[in-house]
Image 1 (cartoon, rainbow, N blue to C red):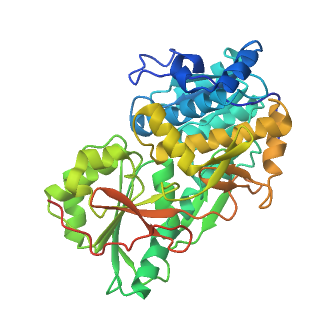
Image 2 (image 1 turned 90 degrees about the horizontal axis):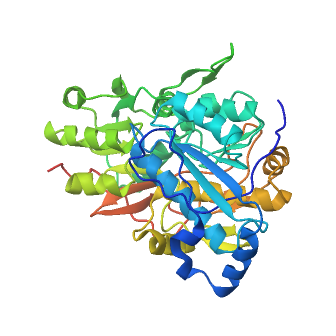
Length: 457
């Protein structure tokens, strides 16, 4: 595998993207001075003036600002943009201002590939910032590899991405998608032992979008072969449901896009499954599925979804979001400490500063890209520049005692680019608050899961 030509140094001024970006050919850039100069201290202003005299570092992202993945795509852009703002507010990166370049790939893989090419060949990107979804990440990582660029991934967990032998990719979430199903089952086991889930559930309906990520979650639960596209290799994995005593009484995959939610909900209701595990490709799908379940009056005892931590989920569903369980990579109560500009930058710092900057509190889809940006900034500082080959080596050299430190916790990676020794957070909507319900021994603020969940209204 080739080692790369040039990459990163982080981040930059602020590219405020109009949520309805007209076409994928429209590129937006802004500077930190345009955003919130009044918050910059006199010392930071002086340093920034020096930085502006040097050529800016370009951080570029192709994200789905419209189309099927628009909600998380827009939030990912906000996370990147805010990180660039903070870097510039704190004096820039190695004396350079950071400029953020953003394109809307319209949730289309071919657009994502074309935009990565343009960011490298036309925009002169020093650092690439990853896109949302395994569907878009899979081809984008190949384009970056061919160009000798590091491609950090915020949201692309399907194992098919990580088993190709690429040495330019690094995942900034806790687990590959096929490993995610372990977390809700571990949560159930714990609460059965505590007598809160009683009796233990014995049946589940598994439903998912026809999507890299969503399909990978279900594959991890039931087991089977994972083919590696572009090769003859197949990896066999065991399913987490095996040996649990939980029977899969219904299983279905829906095409993307999909509209026949009521038929799907009725089919699940007829199965009489005690639980639903739903792997969706977007928050919109999660909202549509919950609405359909409420319409047909099917109230499983536990509803776990792969999407639903976003504020839009609660705002749209209201009381029907209550007691829906969602896995997550981030939570406001997770007291991780990262670094930015060489100084400690805690999860609470992120929450407070983002809220002041955006006028609203952040959620996971902003925290994940912010953490990725933190990691890339540390790689630039660690290597003293934006040479991508050097940055890739530096990232691969991280260890438990010398990790990348972010608001999502510490990261170091195996040879595939997947994090080592990380577990997901299980959350549940309770009275309009996304509570932290598992694991119970890592952070303060854990509350008991509600089981069975409340009925839909």
